Image (tube, rainbow, N blue to C red):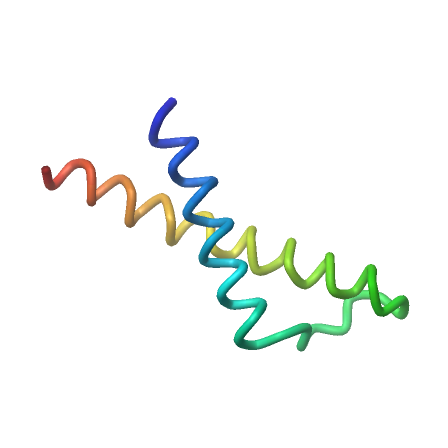
Length: 62
């Protein structure tokens, strides 16, 4: 359970950093505010596998 929570938390930080750095490059909606939320959600879902690998092997390496 701890790995799951840590994965979600790390994904949030990684996605936030990507979103602040790259911005809303994907055109997922015509509405600007909804497009920003959808871009952040896409970055978040993309960061979940990376975060899982970092947490899993980080904790497993201890």
